Amino acid sequence: MSGTTTGEKVTFTLNGRQVTAEPGETVLSVARRLDVHIPTLCFHESVSSYGACRLCLVEVFWGKRSKLVTSCLYIPYPDDRIETDNARIHGVRKLVLELLLARSPHVEAIRELAREYCVEVPRFRPSAVTADATRCVLCDLCVRVCAEVVGQSAIGYAGRGSERVITVPFGEQAEECIGCGACVFICPTQALSYEDIAGQRLMKELNTSVPLVACRVCGEHFATEKQLAKLRERITMPDELVDVCPRCRGTEFTRVLDEALVTKPRV
Amino acid sequence: MSEQTATCMDTILDEVLGRYPARPSSLIAVLQDLQEALNFLPPVALNRVASALHVPRSQVYHVATFYKAFSLTPRGKHLVSICRGTACHVQGDEKVADMLHAELGIRDGETSADGEFTLQSVRCLGCCSLAPVIMIDREVFGNLTAAALRRALAQYRDDMTS
Image (tube, rainbow over all chains, first blue to last red; front, side):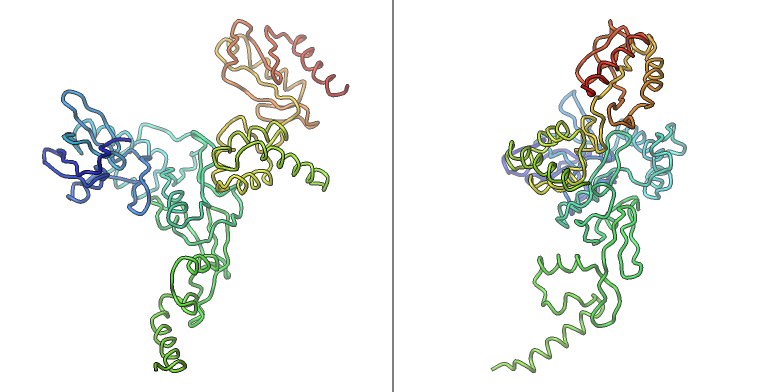
């Protein structure tokens, strides 16, 4: 990629200001830390950077030369001179937003960014495949969160070019999906959704349903079986508290604790 | 799927998987060999490949749908590629496509009912001086006329009856 490999802090110029990046820190991270606004769609601090949306482009200058780089991936070199907003960057972001707006005109996050960049009617028409105005902009966040945070890799791509879509394998019921909803939560364009009906969580766009579990105390369906099995693997929570919903967990915890103290009094 | 074809598939899968180290980087090589052996990539095979090579199924599906060389639906025994390059276009690739449709009853991407031929359009076969040109499997047929096209197809039809 880029940047220094020495594992030392890097001093560079951000919008005319001398700033310091931690070893391996990206320009976007430094900018966010210093309250410098850079728009993003495909970035989330919980997962690795991907550089798909192209909205976080910034311009790096070395002497007379310069180039546009994605700030979510670019690790600065010492003495880089970086601008996060100028006429060139503005123009490119505007073009990107025109394309995004043409593809997904109903997504509020995109409409808002488009307004910010004065994009009203895009010059482009969506391809035949996306003519039904998909909300998905292929930002890869759901794929990354499923792989990196949840550890399931249930979601992936199918097809290529204008036919590329997000899907589970073969577009049908995926056993890998634990119905945790991390993909729905992280999606910046609300392209994914789920519904809890009749004891099942239906991951709508992924054509997958996962059985729900009722809270042992209040009886409300609050999580899926597979989600709780995953939790058991990963965290050290007393087993009898895992199938209790977050709302009942506090009181239940006290009860379990009391019981434990009564049955096993301290010596 | 009958029990016999299932066992046959298992044998092919074992054999192909045995050719390469069981790691993610073998994925494309394995899929290529399976495509060659089976003429398509059935879901059972992709699922087996995923667990054998330690690759998430989602990624196997991604790769299998990404490359035109892979097909998830059965392809005919013979792959007929119509060149759609500029020279062939000028020389009437559309007429060739219509003739093939008349002869085989299939359009781009389809497979004939008898499972013998699959038709696909390709950008350019790189032999523009022979336009209009088609390729059946690995054999090129150029300067096509209606008669030449029928002869070419007949050759492959005979192939499978013999």
